[in-house]
Amino acid sequence: MFSIAKIRSPGRAYRHLKRYRQILQVLFKYGFGELIDKLKLEQYIEIGLEKLSRKSRPRLETMTGAERFKLALEELGPTFIKMGQILSTRPDLVPMEYVRELSQLQDEVPPFAYREVKEVMRAETGKSPEELFARFDESPRAAASIGQVHQASLKDGTDVVVKVQRPGIKEIIATDLEIMLHLASLMEKYIKEMEVLRPARIVEEFARTLEEEIDYNTEASHIERFARQFEGEETIRVPRVYRELSTERILTMEDIHGIKADNIDLLREKDYDLKEIASRGADLIMKQIFVFGYFHADPHPGNIFILPGNIICYVDFGMMGRISRPEREIFTDLLMAVIGRNEKKATEALLQLTDYDREPDRARLEGRMGELIDQYSYLSLKELNLGKLLEQFLELITKNNLVIKPRLFLMMKALGTVEGLGVELDPEFDIIKRAEPFVRRIQLERFNPKRIASDLIGSSIELAHLMKEIPGQLRALLKQTREGKLQIEFKHRGLDRMFSTHERISNRVAFAIVLSSLIIGSSLIVLSRIPPKWNDIPLIGLAGFLVAGIMGFWLLITILRHGKM
Image (cartoon, rainbow, N blue to C red; front, side, top):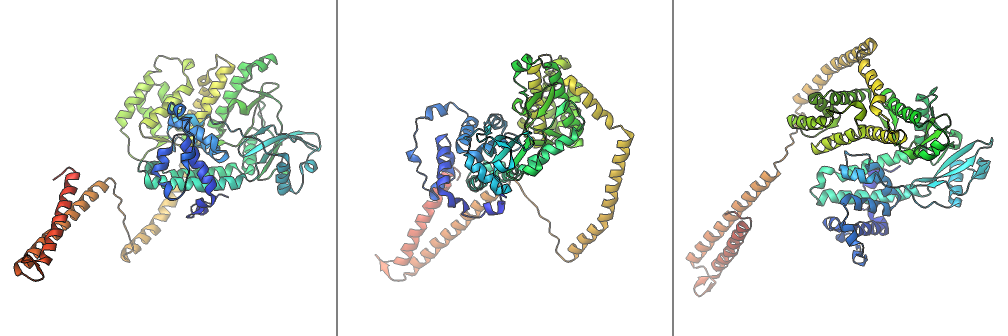
């Protein structure tokens, strides 16, 4: 859909100069003018930034870079808002202060006209809303950057909601992605600090994520898988998807009539059991993470409805998380090590859950982990705040140049969100107590004879495959060596400064040799008295001395400028 190869094509970003200027003007407005200067964009585009008002400058000066970045994304529209929301789940790509700020981005935009809704539905199904539904409300219930939601009724009277994609959104996104990628490429080219962050990779990652999110068939599949894993569970309800009325740009699903989970007053008024709701909500997220490894990654109160009988219903399945069995086990090891006050095991578990370019200082990391654990030494499990603990883990990770895997961050964020909602529903809520049986189950599963046998069989099969492949790979390696095709590549790091110094030394030596040759040659010409002459001095020799003098002063000035003789 959003081909990176096409987006990377040279010059494509300049096809949309009006939008390009608009983006740059917004960046300038929110205090990123220095960035624009560094990217040397004036050689490409006449930006016209001098026309911008500077009245908002004093207010912006009191804001952090993350706050200004969030405001800029909100003003730039759908693609940038969506990018901000996705980046808020990727601490591996952006600093934590930006993650926290971007998580507050509101995806609320003006709705599009009903006639455009009809055009989208006719293009997708060949029929109008009136032909497909018994009732279809022209005014949307809600509008977001990618699409908007309308209430409707099927021919049999069933209430449904229909999510319709915003017309032309693919083209808008493709244009913005072209410009984003061009700006990211310029950042890598002109800003040395950006080489580590690799902004072009961030844009490409964003394009791939957005490609999934903009296809409503993907969300439909999420809902169906989520429903299958809770089949027969009486404490949860998953909305039904109507595939016959859903396409890539239309999603029709059951309309849920319930109370939002954070509407505490209304829940009390309707005699709902708040303690039971908090317990069930915690059990459901624990099952999703520790039993199925597939969970709703955005369980904020607006996405959770409470139905009669204290039944919990999730909505909006655009963002789902996955976590493997080994990762679940390591995460439980981390929690158990913190509870057991064992900083060595906790540090080992943390390193297994993160990525890093250079081997970290384990002794230093253990010390920091010990300090973190000491904060909880005298607390009971009931007093332990899981959300705060997970946030401290994230700070420990970022301060030690470690990178948490995105799916693990989503899991930790989901757990923290559910704990916050649980405490709001029930001040006595104890998420550690609710997690305890699931953690114990994972610990015990490791010693299950069937599990051990299965792991041994799996490892044996992998070893057999490896032993089978080694002779062939060794034979191919020897063949390449015999034919002289074997190449060994060495990659050096940190030698750029040394090479630069050596190159400068070589240039000065060569310069000095040329200068000496010029002086000696000019001296020989003067002594030989070769005409033409000026005041009995050969002009060619005189010119040589003049050039040698200029070169000598130039070399001296260069040496003095660098502060070294």
